Amino acid sequence: AQKVTQAQTEISVVEKEDVTLDCVYETRDTTYYLFWYKQPPSGELVFLIRRNSFDEQNEISGRYSWNFQKSTSSFNFTITASQVVDSAVYFCALSGLNSGGGADGLTFGKGTHLIIQP
Amino acid sequence: DGGITQSPKYLFRKEGQNVTLSCEQNLNHDAMYWYRQDPGQGLRLIYYSQIVNDFQKGDIAEGYSVSREKKESFPLTVTSAQKNPTAFYLCASSFGQDERGNTIYFGEGSWLTVV
Image (cartoon, rainbow over all chains, first blue to last red; front, side, top):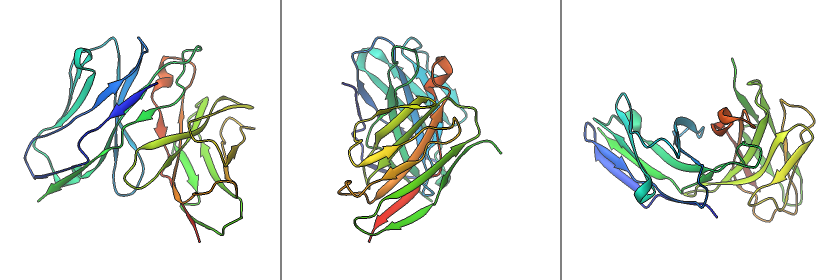
């Protein structure tokens, strides 16, 4: 069975601070994908990043960066110089592959509510 | 614009009634999914479909039904058998049976409240 744990239920920081959201996963699959999604108050989930299990290279996209470490089964997300618009619920998710190579769906963590105070 | 359209945004249901949530996508995605989100919780998979006329149960399929008669459409019916249907429902889609298929995109969601 797959499992994703986001231990931080809520984080509150002041604008311009850096913040890291933690994600720990469990899977028996050798090939899998990890994702981060952002859910603003409107409710829609916005795709941020996908990482496959064979690519441990860290990724940076503007103020966002991701640290994937298979040794600790973690896929952490850092926002640098946070802004009020970053306030949202962030979900980490895991997907295995079915026999056809497609996704059966995502296993989500419970999310971290990030509050950026002005 | 390309995307996933869910309707209605807000829906009220009386106990004992069936209701159907619509989901349409024009992304030419093969796979479609329905998730349920409860307050303060992550998303849980209800049903998914990799191709037309085929679908599989997810983790919490009891009390729900789906159909996939067209590639673009994947409606979800919340039946009276679902004992606690009040939740936020999210439809999603992906390319499905290839490497691109592992990125799943979401609609804006539908709020269902039992009154």
